[in-house]
Image 1 (cartoon, helix red, strand yellow):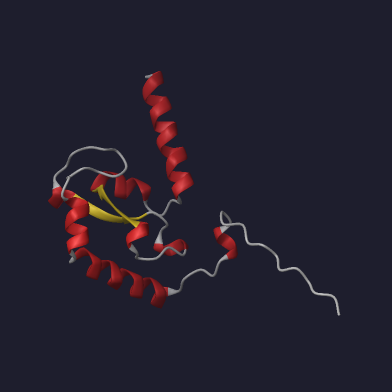
Image 2: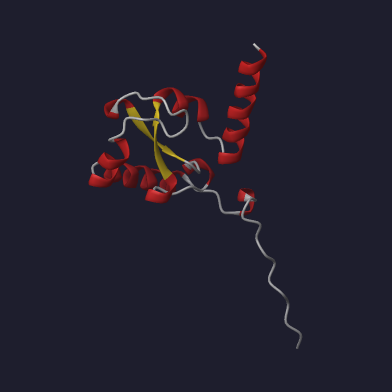
Length: 114
């Protein structure tokens, strides 16, 4: 009997992954709340600088952002969470990292033109 090769999953094809349901997202948000109480989070916010724009906004003004959004299969783990300013967090919404990078690049180009 001939063996079939398993199809390799492209790591950039998030749509091939199982999308989380409401219970999964609720569970991950609770994990994020617990992480916010840890010494690790205090160390992340100690600099007071936004991960995305680099502005210094103070440690209390930083918010928690998931690099890979929960709505797209991201998890509340230390590797997937960064401290950023409210403005960047609101602009990013549920963009994937590559979409956010493209958005930032477009903004930088428009600033050069103006």
